[in-house]
Length: 316
Image (cartoon, rainbow, N blue to C red; front, side, top):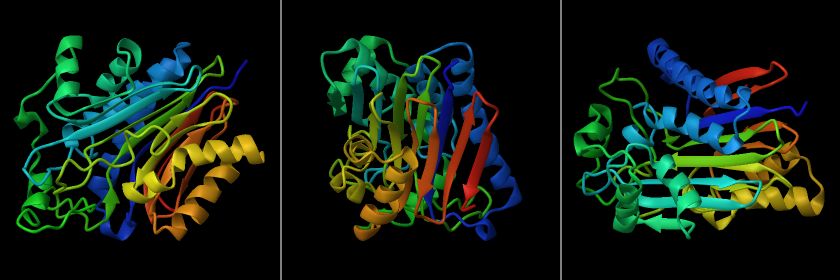
């Protein structure tokens, strides 16, 4: 029987154990475990890789701890603008959205773009109009409010600075970490099909409609049954310029590298030369998985059908 597997991430960055309270650490581990369980249940029941990654992302988007969906950070204007993408490695179909507002689960809208539009990428008001047409669940601004995200934004809103730091003040005076807030999932199902999905609220205090790598097919999200499925997290601009996710696929297809080798080359060599801090998760069509990062930590988890199960936050 084909091995199936699922891997998830909840962001990478300067995540140090000494900055983490026991309560917050447990909350993150619980959130990751719940997301893994949701996606893995789909695979166990014979479901598709696409549905598995979507199920995991929905759980992460509903969790205030992660910068996606409900937990999205504030923009310069004091709003949430969210991005997401999903890709099916079987037929290379994909859907992505950027700059959307009030959508409870951006990954569900990205999936609708993939399945029920003639397009790949929608943005702004047009994407929101499509969400309404497709019956995607919307929420009022209050749903996306969290005090610690607001306090974080308030500290820099009157400056021209933007922040990749997700300082969890107020929740528990918890962390002074630089954390690149993104959530992602990759999966290989029992039929050997693979998929990738990524969702984010972007940067705190971002302006001018800034979009990072997460919704860009080939940069932050990519899947191809011939090679791999990749979801990235990190400082988006270098990941865009490196076409990071697709580069892993190219190294596998054209240079014959394994998944682990290709991800290591991109994360620890190519991105490091570009000051590209962060990481990525990946699977191939044999169910092999890898989680690679050059930052101090990455919220991550992995489970497969041969009994391997791992959740981590810090460097091993």
